[in-house]
Image (cartoon, rainbow, N blue to C red; front, side, top):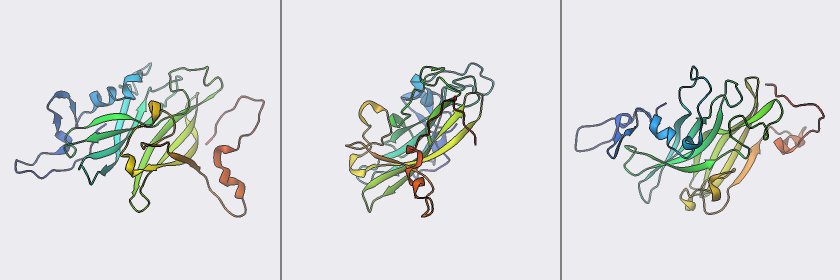
Length: 235
């Protein structure tokens, strides 16, 4: 559950591993045990614990997933993958969401600032009003950050899934969102929805296979089928 892998900094003082760094203002906020950081992040504070702690001991598990260094300030910015509110319908899965973190001392301490890409649906435990049938939307996660200085945009590739309430996820979808680098990671208004930081809402699209023989596939998940039977998902 470490937020950082083992990197080293060069100082005039003895070399210290980043993974062992501790916030001097808060001894509970440490890189080798990010429980406090995950639980007190924007996602963590609204997460809830699993009914049984046998599989999930914490309400939120977070991990740093991609870092960009601002060449103007030297600050480190990173995407944070969250797995939170486990077993929301008594299943074995969880919700996912993406936040962002900032370090102003080259990775020694981090502050998880705000949401970046979140689910357009409810992430409340047992919300049967939002999900009255046999499936639910697990949110957004597993981000990959790509910085294209040529075009001046951040790109975030990430995934979403449909989960069967009886257990097991299926119906995997890939997405990509972008925002201008000039925005310097400003959070979206309200901190929710599909948007990455920037001065204006990000552009987002689903990624789906496409070929000349099946051009309709380009529509991806925008096509919906009508059904009179309760839906389920299959891998």
